[in-house]
Image (tube, rainbow, N blue to C red; front, side, top):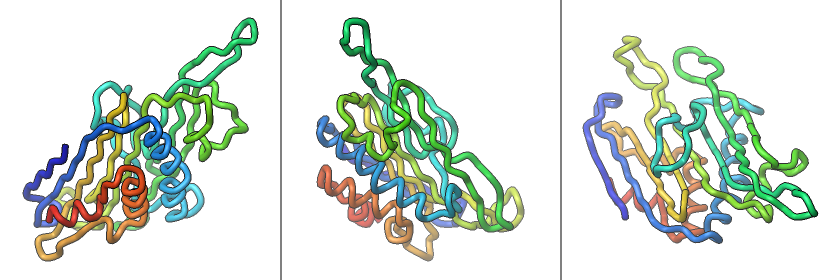
Length: 229
């Protein structure tokens, strides 16, 4: 189920576009999505920055939920995966306890009046072995993923009424939630009336995510957004 919403934008003097889609996703496709997020999308974010810092990018806000039922998280969440992981029980059997891993992007500093810097922090909770790299969790059996979330927001230097000048403001976002067999995607973009702008043409991580989604479920996000102009 796809929807498109347009409205006037006070940020750029143009308009905003919000494109969203919700559909079912199989267990196998979910594993492919998690693996692609960990081994393709997250590295594209890290490589765009300087070590553990990223400029003019950050994770989603805590209140940005596309699917109900997922517990709230810390602010500026780039990636979060939750599920059940095996632990040894009495008699040599296995039990399953909840685990969660995440990549957060707390604010670090401003660079002049045009740019904003966030740092990247990895977090783990539950019985995930420390020796198991985060990038391998997509196919690490017998982990049982329950939900996965991804979100990235991009800043642009635009006129701000609050500062009476130019300042970095969030103008584009890409959000993905998967929970209980459902997959929800939302792309938002603020665009100037004088320049028809597609974030997939300008933001490397958006392009990587578009290719991943297309390879898994056959949905071309870049083409969909272009067709919605």
